[in-house]
Length: 163
Image 1: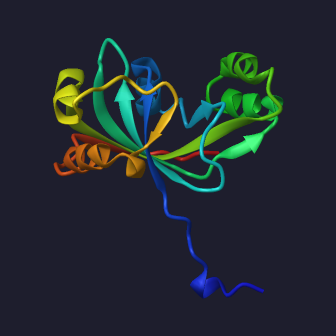
Image 2: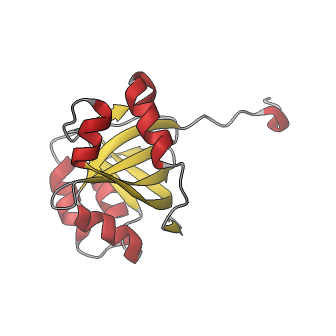
């Protein structure tokens, strides 16, 4: 039997991922409580550095994600539907050719002034919005960018209650 007093909580992995600004606003409105992905880290929470795609084109937020829920496309679609009526069908369509999908519970969001795409290119030497996810600790220049992003006070914060 494991000693609960000394049980270790997994350390969140820091990642950079892109997000459509429309979905980002749905988080702030309270109708998006999970991010849905085909591939992501399994078995550990994550700290997501959010790059908002065009027309915003800005690294602008940090979202704390709980451990991914890995389940059938039908069950992941039910999670989507419970957050926002009508969303389940499109989420099911996204996962229907897979054995499983991932629902990433959103726990907390912090928005920062951030960095526009030109600033990111200057800081990193080159920058292309990530198509999947990029592990921050595997990219030393990203560690510096993420530390700089979080070095100022957030402009707004939100705690998300997932079901």
